[in-house]
Image (cartoon, rainbow, N blue to C red; front, side, top):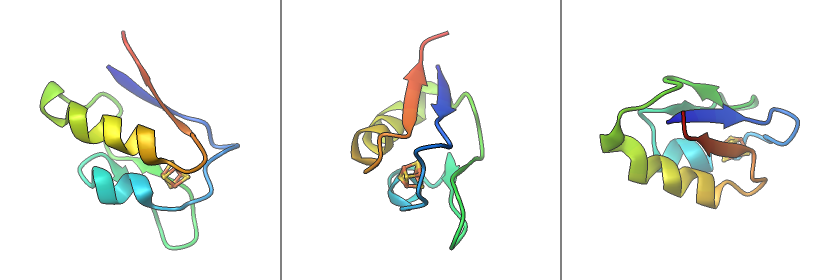
Length: 64
Ligand code: SF4
């Protein structure tokens, strides 16, 4: 799987970082940075929570 960010939507709420800090990093007044674009399956459930709870729906999981 791969994570895709819509940077037009991301408003830096940092929800993704709290759900999956291994994958998402969000600077104090910036937008999300992907620490890994294709996280291994062990992180899948955390990534799914990040996608689900992102308030602006800026994250998407793409099956490769
Ligand atoms: S939770 Fe969504 S809006 Fe907030 S930083 Fe992460 S991707 Fe951006």
